[in-house]
Image (cartoon, rainbow, N blue to C red; front, side, top):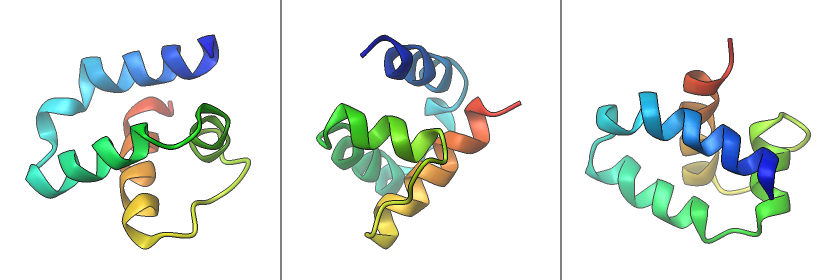
Length: 66
């Protein structure tokens, strides 16, 4: 999914280095989710039910949103 790839590339270029070990684990879990779910969460069309997933989604959003 091209849109998701672009969002994640932006995050990886700017925010990856700031993640601690727990957040890296959360990011790994996030990337195992279906692409359409990740895109919906990052574009604020939905929210993950899991608190840890919401935490990493919010971190990624903070790096990719203007």
